Structures are given as C-alpha cells and as structure tokens.
Image 1 (cartoon, one colour):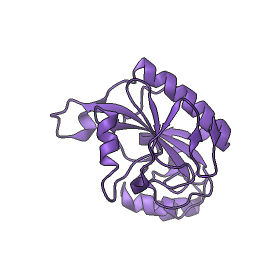
Image 2 (cartoon, one colour; image 1 turned 135 degrees about the horizontal axis):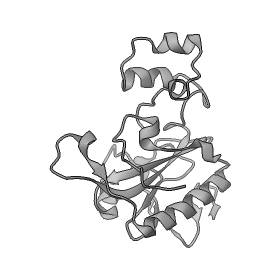
Image 3 (cartoon, one colour; image 1 turned 180 degrees about the vertical axis):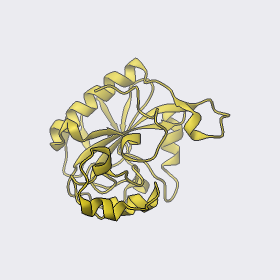
Image 4 (cartoon, helix red, strand yellow; image 1 turned 30 degrees about the horizontal axis):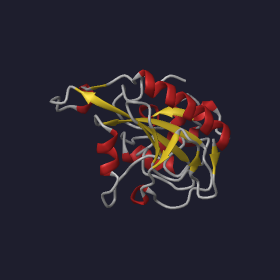
Length: 200
C-alpha cells in the first residue's frame, strides 16, 4: 500500500470512492483507528448516504464481498466517532483532577466535552485524529425499536480477509500502534456488538 500526497491509497485492492461531503477539514496526525459497522445491508446504501449534505461517514468501507472502498482522504477528518467515553475511567488511571472534572457528568455529551478538552493519549482517538473503517453489516432484528437490543451481523470471511489486510497496511503506513485500534463501542456509547466479530 502507498498513500499519495492527497491521502489517497494507491493499491489494486482499494477502490477510490472519495466523498468530499464527509470530509471535515485537515487532519494533521492519525493517532488511532476506529472499527465500525454500518448498520445497513449494502455498501451501495452507505455510499449513497455519503452524498447527502452534512453526511457522516468513515474513511474506508468494506463490502460483504470484501471490496474495499476509500471514501475519504486519510489526511481529512471525518465525523465517525461521536462523544468519547472517559479513557482514564476505562483504564482505571484517572488523576484526582480527572475525577473532579468528570464528577456528576452524565454519559454522552457531558463526558464527551470533558474528554474533548484532553490531549491524546489521555483520551481515546476521536474525530480529530483517527481513521475510521466501516464494515457493511446490519443490526438485527430490523423491527427492534431499541438499538441496544439489536445484534450486528458477523463479518463475512471475505470482509475479515480484507479488514485484516487493510488494518495491517494502515497501521504500518500511518505509524499507528495496535494498542490504538478500537471497536466503536469501546470509545463511544454505541451498541456493544458493533464490530465485535472483527478480529485482529
């Protein structure tokens, strides 16, 4: 894999499908990689949604047949993470000042604001310094109104092969340690099964 000056991957295994609508401005440094699942059943649906003004999305998309699309430059920020969980709480290493800042804060945006004021590695990689990989997979059953009661589909064998290659190549090219690769629900308040079948 090679990454050109625009932040586009030059490799026969990656199809460029850049959507400027999901790019949110320059990203100087990549500190981590966040693994997502789309919640939808097709790559076509995800790609179509990226055409909407103000759309959110990640840098890469892996279809069920293993096709890898690059949908944003790795030199551009994308809104793919959301409010960050407290890293010091998860890793049991909060300082007294951290605990004071978090005291009385509810999950979601209140804690996310506290974390956003921190520098990495005191916080998880977020929108400002992480690359996102979306893997096509539905959260089922479709008719379940509570998103937390749904279960994401497991990756197909083809998706796992492509994901493993892409993750290995990106961590090497971008200098991201494997300790800074996270499933989406590890860093933000999402369905716990999202990305749970992705192996690395």
